[in-house]
Image (cartoon, rainbow, N blue to C red):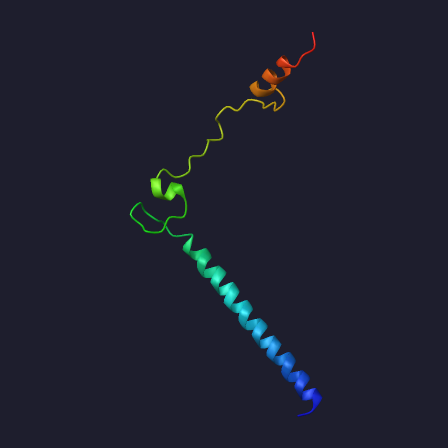
Length: 88
C-alpha cells in the first residue's frame, strides 16, 4: 500500500463513521421527538410531566381576560422594604 492509499482509506473510514454516527443521532432524536406527540392517559406508565399524571392539562388565559399594568418596582415586598428603611 502506498501512503496515498492509506490517507484515502483513512479519510474514507472517518467519513463513513461520521455519517453513520450522524444518522444514528438524528434518527434517535426524530424517534424520541415523535413519541412526545402521542396522547398519554392517566393509566400510562410513561409520565412526561406532572400534568400528564394528574390529568389537569394546561389552562391558558383567554385573550379578553383583563390584565392590568405591571409595575415591578411597586410590589408589596419592595414597598415594605422601603418604608422600613426611610430616613425621618
